[in-house]
Length: 464
Image 1 (cartoon, rainbow, N blue to C red):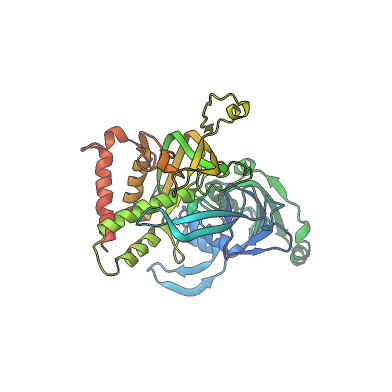
Image 2 (image 1 turned 90 degrees about the horizontal axis):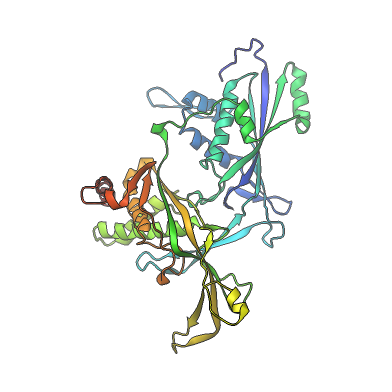
């Protein structure tokens, strides 16, 4: 650890307490356990440590400092691994999470449902509906970092600032299904305590009185003003290709529906939930389109289906691997689709939501008490998808699908057969470079040439 110019070189214990607010749901996986208090859970500190280490590797931190802080096996200059394991100088506590839902029968959890898509038909796969147990939005997360170093060591402040920025940017996340935009949080408060060891008795006092240490509280803005600048994520180490589409749903995107006489019905299965179109809905669409392309490019063999699924799991993740594509929730457009009815019944005139009548497939007539009242939203929003930069060969099907979404060829959400979910945009952005779809997709257009290059790489990967 680098020493300060402070002539005393006094050994200190630095304590940093983080208080976070969850911006998206946090899925419960093997790294979690339930506390005795209702509505409280904990995530193991080693899981958070792994996320922090992974983020720090993509910054300008030196290998020496990374090992000093996070521990690990030392690598010699010739690339050989030293047998000696270097201990970490940072203690990371378990993450305590208090649910924002206090009256849930699931002890503070909520359930999110989804349906797997059949790659051949593009429809819901039979018996493949799944449920995720999650901690809801606005849950409170707390954890503590304890670091032993020398008084005035500026690297400590630099490390903590880097971790705070990693959480704030969404690169350090909590729980599973991170590629579906779960586990994102924002920093509400950072509390700092610094304890000096001037004599032997100070260590005993510290161990016995840790619970009564005095902390100074800072919000993120104030902490930024007093801390060192974070380790930078250099251009060469940036993790993702970022695809963004600014556009709108001109006709509406499906939100939910209720049946007549069933006021509390929540039987809508896709669309807008909690003011957002779930990332899993968009990811399912991208996955389906990618699978069709792989099936087309891959030569026919006896085990083709297994090979296709292995390729899909490599790209999008599975039980044994984390995917290379990260999809974000889509903020719901704000304007409601309204239908003006010329009806003498004031109650009917007041209800401007679209209505549909369910049809009996056997008789062709309407089903009694099956009038569906839907909620549909239209207006501007943004779509965002990331692909790991080290996997450029995966970019072709994702970029092509995003272009097709922008051109209204791939609708999003539910009830797309009646025209809902069509998205429109003339501009698509790849790593902050904007492309005009009307001009750059022409025969000699630059985006078309870029797509052809990505296609060649993707085709080669499919034939491996």
